[in-house]
Length: 292
Image 1: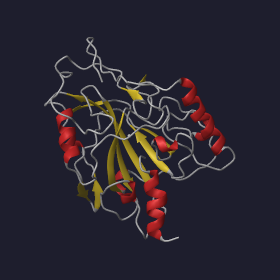
Image 2: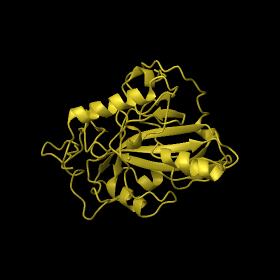
Image 3: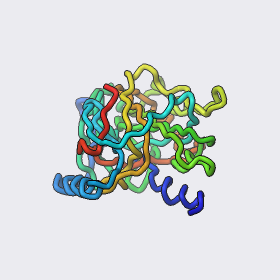
Image 4: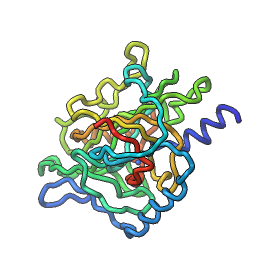
């Protein structure tokens, strides 16, 4: 199989590794439709069945407050991001991981990754929750709103690559098995020009010969590190085969919603919307121990 065929068929397929606010001024997500618990249970059962005895490595996302995991597949933790190339930045609507300051379940959603996952447990002020005009990073399923929770994934690769669209940008023809690392930062969107500017958060520079996102927050808690996989709702019923070292920060950063909209209008990654969410992986046989 040619290298380019592998890149598009295998790696890019793994890409996406995706409200109303209340009078109590809490940050919430309300989904129009939720599938029944039985649908999610069936998806988890299918995942367990399709992976049993197949030798798949540990999966993502997970509860970062729990350190259990009995998956026997082991691979080396990717180097520190300072020794890797930042190759992609994207975000999911709602956190795929659970834990820290994002343990509130958004609901089952549509069963396809929309309106599910976990949201910020805290509160924004009434001023921060004031709606903004226009559509922000809109898709056919809607646009982002103040109070929305996003999971920002900064993807790094050991390959000699440049930042670009999709996770395919993280693979080079001459490096078919790069070490992959994802730095995860959960954010909540606020109508607040004094909040973090997303363009600054997602700024990319070359540092010591590597592409970096130097403004990833350092004040949102000690990251939980573990061995896992790529994510996204395409893997609700099957395993992701790619090996990823994760670092997920437990605290949430407040970001100006208008800056997110501006970033969606133009960025090197061609990202213009929030991606869907994979079901939380619960089976210990599909989880590795965390660094806790």
